[in-house]
Length: 77
Image (cartoon, rainbow, N blue to C red; front, side, top):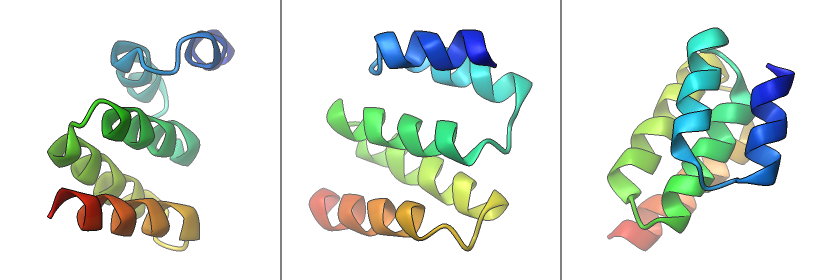
């Protein structure tokens, strides 16, 4: 995972790195959150919303994910 975290830190908009990291650790809330944020930056709102919703299935108590989902839904509509 450290390889992917390093790669993501260097290139935060490389969506493929997030997906590769999630194949190793599918419940990583930080990777899901960062992926959702990267998708928003690319105006891929449907994908970002789905990513945040998946993250909330693993971590329903994470306020930051709820906040980013709400902001994305507001921006998308």
